[in-house]
Length: 565
Image 1: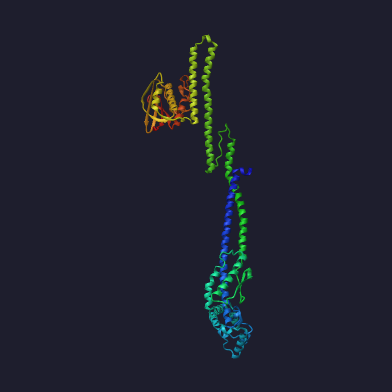
Image 2: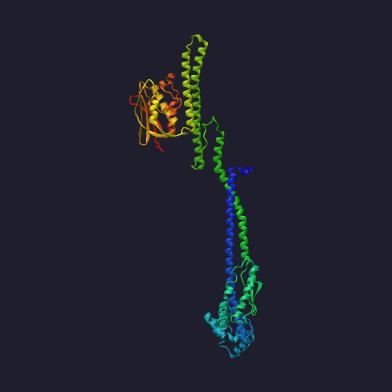
C-alpha cells in the first residue's frame, strides 16, 4: 500500500504495534495478577469466615448435645432470650416499681416478697427449662458489666445488650457445655476447614458450593470418627443474607452466612472492561502522537530531500538547509553540504581541467597544422627537414601532455599504487640524472634509500622534477637522496631564478606556469608538478617548494620507508 511506503507511516505503525503489544501484554498481565490477588484474598476471606462459622456452629452443636444429655431439648442459641422472656418480666416490674436499685438486686430478685419470687420462678421454669443450669454464667455476665445501679427498664436494656449476652453465651458454651472430647476432635479435624478452598476457583459459585458441601460433610464425618459420634451433619442451604452462602447444622438449624462472591465477580469484570476499553484508546493516542512527532522529526529530512532534488550539475553552489539541532538530521545536513562542497570543487576543477587541456592540446595541433599548411602551399621553397623537426617537436610535446593527463587520471581513479614493489629511490634518481643534457648534475648526495611503491609512478615523479629543474636552471642541478627519521627525503635543486614565496603552493596546481614558464619554448605543460604531488600523496608522502642555496628553486619530496619483506 502507498500509505506504508513512507518512513513516517512505517515508524508510526511499528511504534503503535510495539506499544500496543506492550499495553496488551501489560494489561493482560495486570488483569491476571489482579484476578489472582483477588482470588487469594477471597480465598482467605472465605476460609476465615468458614473457620468462624465452624467455631460458632461447634459451640451451638456442643451446647445442644450437652443439653440433650441433661434431658433439655432447646436451641442453645436462643437460651438467653428465653431466660429473659418478657412473659415473666411483668411480675418483677410490679414488685420493684421505679425505685433505683443495684443490677444484682434485680437479677437475683433481692428485697422483694418471697411470694413474688416464687411466682417469677414458676413463670421462668415454664418458659425455660434451662434456667436452673445457667446460674454460673449469669453471675459471670453480671460481673462483666460491673453490677451497676439501674432502674428496671435499664436492667432489661442491659440484660438484652450484646455485651451481657456475649459473655453469657461464651460462658454457656465454653465453660459449662463444651466437653474435652469435642475440643480434642476439633483439633484433629480443623485442617479440613482451614484448607477447604485450596485449589478452588473461588469466583465460581458452583465450585465453591460443591467444595463447601464436601468439606462440611468431611468435617462432620471427621468429628464423628474422633470421639463425637453424635455430631450432626452440616449442610449448605444455598443463598443467605446479601447473596452469601448459608451453612446449617442438622440439629439446631443455625444459619451462618459466608461472604458474597458477586461483589468480587463484579470487580473483576469491571477491571476487565477497563482494560478492554483503555488499551485501544491508549494505542490510538500513541498512534496519533507518534504520527505527529515523527512527522515533525522528519520535516527537516523532507526539506533536505526537496533541496537535493533541485540541485543539478549547474547548481552545486546551493546547500541543503541545516536545522541546527545538533542531532542526526543536523549531522546529515552538514555531511551533505560538505559533500556538495567537494562536488563543487571537483566540478570546478574538472571544468578548468577540460578547458586547460583543450587549450593545451589545441596549441600543438594548431602549430602542426600551420607548419604543414605552409609547407604544402610552397613545397618548392620549404625545408622539409626543418618541417619534420618542428612536427616531431610538437608531437613530443603532445605526447608528454597526454602522458601527464593519463597520470593525473590514474591518480584521480586511485590506481597509482596498483603495482607496488621494493625499490631504491636513489638508484632511480641516478638513472634519470643521466638523461639531463646541457647542464651539470651533482649526484654526490644521492645515497641508497629503499622503500616500497609503484616503480613507474615514482620514476615519473623523478623525471618531472628533473625536467622542471632543467627548464629553469642556469647551469647546474643538485640532487640528494637521504634517509631521515624513517623517511626517504629526495631533493632536486636548481640555480635558476627560483619560485616566489607567494606562488610556491600554486606551482603544484594543474596547468600552472609562472613567469618564464609561460614561454612556450620552455616546453612545460603545467602538469608536471601536479603529477608529482598526486603520486607522492598517493604514496603517503609530501612535496614542498623551497628556496635553494643558490637562490633557485628547491623541491623536497618526503616518502615513508618500507622495510624489505
